[in-house]
Structure formats: C-alpha cells, structure tokens
Image (cartoon, rainbow, N blue to C red; front, side):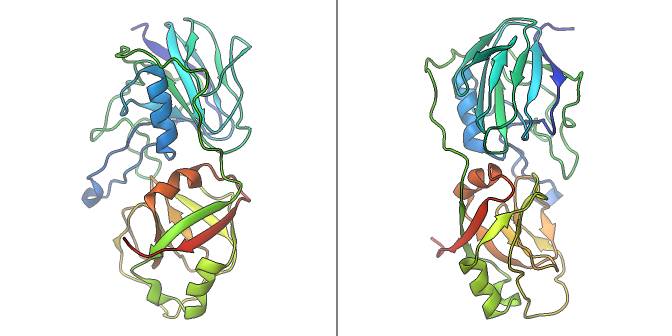
Length: 289
C-alpha cells in the first residue's frame, strides 16, 4: 500500500470528500454536488499549492482527526476552529507542515458550520463522472468518512503559499439572500409573495447539503394541487406544502414538484453554507440582470 495516504482517526459528525462538483449531468438526474463553501475550499487548496479542482475534506460542526502516512502540508479554512498537530496548536487558515504519523486534529467549529481541510497533492479517491465529490442525495462518489477510512493522496504539484494567515469572510450573524422572482411565484398569494421578501426567517436545524431549510411565516398558496415534476437549479427556493421555504444547495434534486417562488443568486450561497441553526435569514428581492 502506498505511503501517500491519510488515515481517518475520528470522522466527526459528517466529513465528506468534495471538489468543484460534477456539472453538466442534470439531464441524467445527477446533482452538481461539490464543496458548499466553494471559495473556502479554493483558498485552502491555494494555501497548500494544489490546483483549484483538487479534492478536499468538508467537515460539519465537529471537525475530524487525521493521521497522514507521509509528511504533508495542510491548511484548514472555512468555519473557524482550533487546529492542533500532536496536541500542539497550529494556525488556522495557513499552511502547516504535518510529519508522517503525526495526529492532525481539526476541532469543532467556533462559528459557522463547515471547515475545509486541504492536503498537499489532494485527496485521490476514484472519480465518478469526472468528480471526486460525495453526493449525499444520489450516493455517487465516496461515502461519508468513517473512523479507520484510509484516503489515497496525490503527489504535490506546487509550492505552498507563504502567508501567516489568509483572511476569510466570517460566518454570517445575519444571512441576506438576494432572490429573483421564481417561475412559480404566481402559485402564491400576493400577501405570501410580500411576506417572503419582507419578513424574517431563521435557519432550521433540519438544513443539510441538499437544502437550507428555514423557520418563519408560512407562505400561502393561491393554487391548490401539485405541479408535475420540472427542472430545478442551484439556489432555487422551493416551497413544500408546509409553506416553509427551502433553498436548494449543491446536492439538491434536479427535478421537483413543489413550486419555486424565487432563486437565490449563486454568490450568496457560500454564506448560506456557513449559517448555523437560528441565524436570521432575510430574502431580498432583486431584479434579474
């Protein structure tokens, strides 16, 4: 077995392999997938000298613990968290050299939800449809990590960055999501359409990689019944029968039968990936470009 590998000592609540996803397969029912906070994943890759599309680890709330079988350079970004090597604190959001056999602990998030761990050479699990990403909806890609999982690593291809700490956006204390009018906004009463962009919601603990769920005023429909399934896009705000909006994230289904009241602009979605349950959410109506 190659010594260029990474052993998972503690998998944490949910740690997955992610890269930039598998675009172009929606017609086959395959979601985009990929890192929910794509800018954070790209940054940690730059810090360790990886190309932008290298696969990283995406942790959820509780971090993970890893033991490389070879000396590697790592960087942890996204949700701020304590990072240690053999119990010694090391910088977050900066390249760190980890000796072979040392224990890298990525702690629980101090704020935000998802931290990203890049390792020099990238995680080299087998690609599926051109991506190494774990897709929780379709089951494509490697399964979520478990204690004892061993991940192969690629060969380093570049020099790591020379920075003390790379600045990153703080997780949102309040989430403002710009939305354009959706294709089925006319399925809702005028009062519901106004409430959607004027009333406050909060992030629900039921949120996941498939969708950001919110709690707040229920949106009343103007039409009874259900739609035939139709295509959905990243950022679509679908409203199921309970009236609570759901913002589709990277692992969202490619079709759906609930009406879409709006679509969140893509640049706002990384902040949604870092919004902890209870975070206030405001949908702000904007015109299409």
